Length: 129
Image (tube, rainbow, N blue to C red):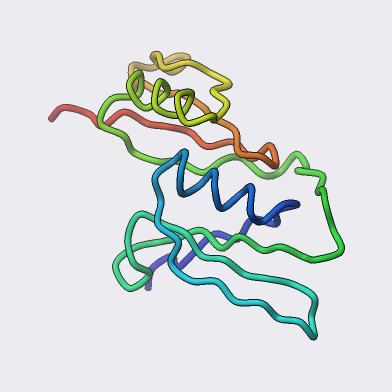
């Protein structure tokens, strides 16, 4: 067994696709409209779906905004250098909500960015082993 994808409901599909592909550097893997259901699914990721987990961006045509709730946490992405990743996100128009630095009560270097819908993405610096 393996994790296939994580689904996020988004209010503006095009803006979300730009964020995940242009700002975070993922690839657009596939997209399909479901006119009878009035929704579109777009899958993005760093690897093809056969090789790794991806994100499913679900756009319900009649919904422009969602309440994020208090149960959802974040998506985590491993990066080589968290400081450099934050600079790249800012350069590409993304929003950094926590600059790179050691996590509270630990030594792992992390940062947080936010997508257009307010979902948090944690950037975790790869450990030198």
